Picture 1 (tube, one colour):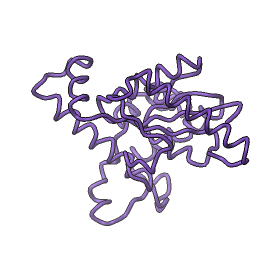
Picture 2 (picture 1 turned 180 degrees about the vertical axis):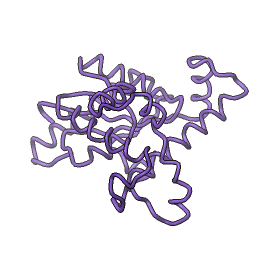
Picture 3 (picture 1 turned 120 degrees about the vertical axis):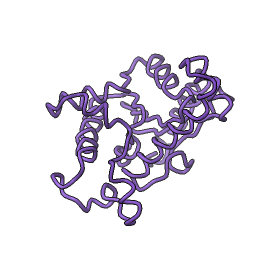
Picture 4 (picture 1 turned 90 degrees about the vertical axis):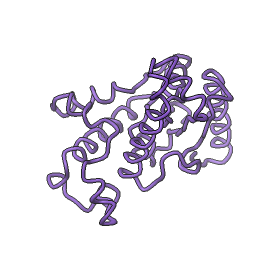
Length: 216
């Protein structure tokens, strides 16, 4: 971690997680990847980029069947690549791209199970940004210009989609504090306050690692 840090950021819809990631990347002068991950995955694989956008942070359409059968194919590795639904194949391709990006240097990665994909990487700090629903609805209305009558429903539906994606493609629970190194309430801290906390965590973790030789 001394020479490189990869920050992964999960986020509730409307919490400002993307803004936190962007501000963190700008303050450190490092690369920022959100939708850019999809572009890189398309370039790496030679597939149409729209395929990755269509599947972005959505589990395979066979999710309901998998839940009913008690079978999580991505977590167990039970299926061969060619036997998997298209979304699952795209997820594996995207996973390779995320690992490649992480190997290139310090960066910020938004969503897309990056913390789970990079779980064995000692240079990773995983963060989850959340906020009370009232604050998220306010951001949805005033920043994303979402209809006030639909804002809360959209926040909750997006959260559900992200949770389904994360829970399907990993053996962890989206948004659960023990899943991440750091969980931050953006309504209490603000965007820059979240960045301050992340950097303070990084410095403390680095001192601990130097003193004990432990990974994060």
